[in-house]
Image: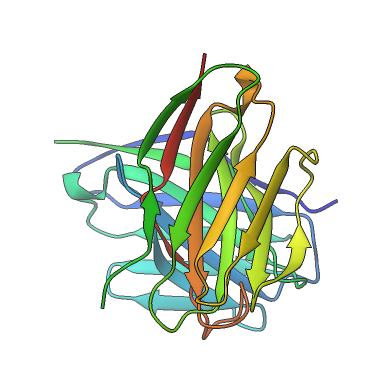
Length: 110
Length: 116
């Protein structure tokens, strides 16, 4: 069935780049998303990529998609303490349903 | 424009009781999706509604049900509560479908349900 996997934790130093990885199983995934969740809040859409794209850049965020390996990554340049949050990878495969990963908790050390 | 609102924000119930959670989407949004978030499982899709019709349902028992009203507001109900139902329940709204690039899902803050 459909599955999205992410590592659970990532720790980086302030000013370094963070790379959060995600793998998915459904090759018919059309849209792939990254969401951010801060404590006590819902999910905020950060960026998305369509399946026919390899890369998308949006300010400090870079999304890379390797469709052959079904691998998606989110790179955050110049990571700040305010970037500490849980990051969710999500894929839409049709049928009005989006599948989410378990989330990667990013810790940023000052 | 007001965001997605969910009420109540916190609930404490006991096993065997039932609960109803409410979600008001962003004005003009017609699609509402519900998710269950737990530390071990991440976000699990419950169901999606559009124009009062359920278009998809996740792998949850029949104790979990929902509905959508003509004003797009949605409710979900959980009957015969179990300890494992303790979770954060998130609602998300979008203009039409729940996944295209132009129909971003906007999430509410969630309702935290604790079952004792």
